Image (cartoon, rainbow, N blue to C red; front, side):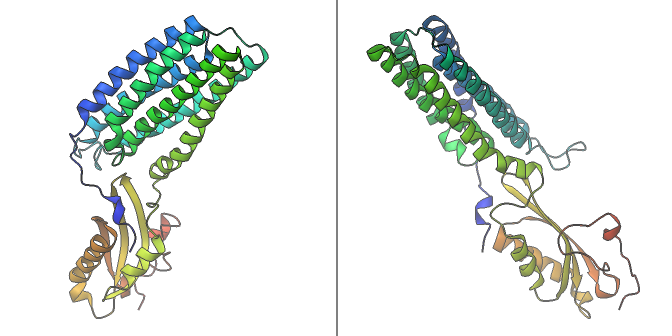
Amino acid sequence: MTGHHHHHHIDPEAGDARVFWAVVINLVLTLAQIIGGALSGSLALIADAIHNLSDAISLAIAFLARKIARRGPDGDMTFGYGRAEIAAALINYTTLIVIGLYLVYQAILRFFAPADVDGWLVVIIAGLALIIDLGTAALTFSLSKTSMNIRAAFLHNVADALGSVAVIIAGTLILLYDWRLADPLVTLLIAGYILWLSFAEIGAVIRIVMLGSPPGLDTAEVLKSMGDVDGVANIHHLHLWQVHEHEVALDAHLVVAQGEWARGDAIKNAVKKMLRESYDIAQATLEIECTRHACGDAQAIGHASMDAAMPQNAHRH
């Protein structure tokens, strides 16, 4: 069966200190790189600094989102605040895409007007940045396995570490060969990587925002498995979505087979047990109907319209 990988049981308080220190370190690094980039004349170093600033912001948003996500359901947010992390991930990836496009624009301008660059200063600051990037990535690596939000922040750091390596290479080429085009070329490489990474990851975030079914679950298979439970005549109006990254929810109308109405609750519980054991779906809401009063001409998945959800033939046999 599919769907076993959707729930990860993690300590919600784990890693807050690591995320906090990662924010502080990235802010210090950003300041150092902006000053270094301005003094050396390196656009690649400033590109890396801008990306580092986005790291600090992304980690700060991730940190706050983790805190907010732990709040329980209330009258305003009946599903709880778990989606705060999804909102944070969406903001982070969108920001990265904007930054990537801006760096491409700046790099192209530099190809037409190469600037003087202090190679030594670039290499020293980029080397320091690489050490800090690797340290920050290490702080958030274990958390990134269980949180889409933290993974967005972690990938910022990985991209930064690679960016720092590229900046060191550019600085070395400028030192050895006075090849000034290395600076905008490396800026383009950093920007390209940022854009590739962001577009690859943002789809899964948008899927959750759009109430899409979990990517690892086959909706048709879930529907068939529900229909195969003894005593089930029909399943319709099925909705399957991710409440947040680690929680899947389902609701559906369950038609109890003719002559089985006395077992209605037992059949409903059997379907819920199957969903929990086979697909790791713990949050299932099932409306049971008898064959005589079931929704007429109902579609299996979703509602065609609000009208389609209403019983259309109360006297159907």
